[in-house]
Length: 139
Image (cartoon, rainbow, N blue to C red):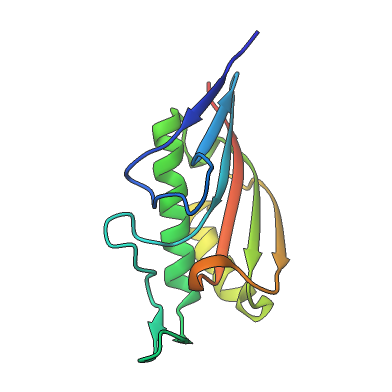
């Protein structure tokens, strides 16, 4: 019988709650919802806030890229990579960002195309505009 493996890395942003970056079970890796926060600075690429800390603007391309880079780091820690992702769920704050998000996503998955669901949501934690989670396999 396989055991659950809790997977965390300092190369991805610290979890905002009581969860692991990913959980491994047998050959599967289940990556928790992750966003674009920089693991060293905790800043969100492309995010601009006003003097009161309210979101003024954001760059969905920069956030998508940083989110996928964070996922790549978690998968590396788990002993796999983006080419072994079998499913991705994406949560967008604004479905109007779908085209730009999809362009950046295609850079990370030019040939390998995992099953994917993209959902528009009313809110996300911490001023982010995109969150992604995925399932991958290890060989």
